[in-house]
Length: 280
Ligand code: NAD
Image (cartoon, rainbow, N blue to C red; front, side, top):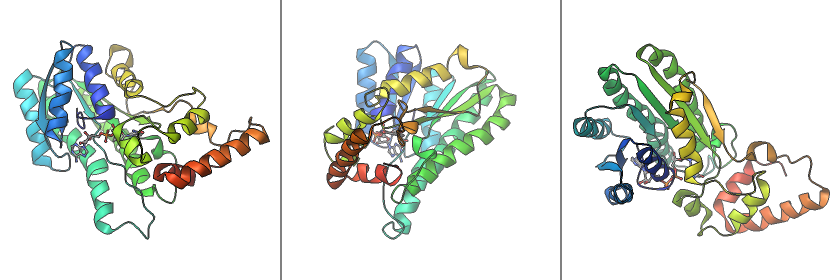
């Protein structure tokens, strides 16, 4: 479980542990990983922490090997670690671009590559889930690097599914919509303030997503009911994708939405980024 020290990764780790898995919580931040392990153990689950940067193959392989040596097998791998950085083509430096690709795209490749070797070795097959984003389907002037890395995850998974079926390995990706995590809050520039109110109005389900919403989909994809599913991408976004054009809204409601978004965008980098892709 990469990026297991925070947000969505912590939620998935806790859910898989609750369902009976022994979880290797991998994170570049060892204290965050240890905290997740503490939470799992306090709830009666089994977990250990491993420090690794997913962009470094030796480090991620060592983490996979540690888990394999400790628990004797590897059945599930979740490639979740990722970063969200925004910027226009004129703003983004070559190093910033490479940095985001290194974690979000290369990091997923290296995680899955390391895990696949151990799963194949076991001969029992397994499940792999990669965390993409709703941004794999849409983009904007400030989020194109992020979108490109997440679209890459979605497409790599489709290719891998073709190869890995022969070993009994199913591999799928999930596209979360906006989920309330430290990453989203950091980008919003505050602790769940106005952006949350704006998003709640914009989603048919009427609320922001939580890590548990994504963890539930991971649990399904790793469970017995998903054996016929591989190479697929699952959007878990509270219906926000089609709410962007909002054809059923009255002109008054549209006006209210426009001014809410404009007000929030003045204060909020992530809303500005989201607005690049919105048709209001
Ligand atoms: P988060 O920042 O709360 O947690 C990410 C974790 O990954 C952190 O613990 C961090 O230390 C770790 N990490 C970062 N770089 C790493 C690296 N190089 N190696 C190992 N660990 C690393 O973020 P989150 O919101 O929980 O996001 C998790 C995933 O979900 C990311 O891939 C993100 O792109 C994706 N996602 C998030 C949202 C959202 O709204 N929060 C929406 C769509 C997709």
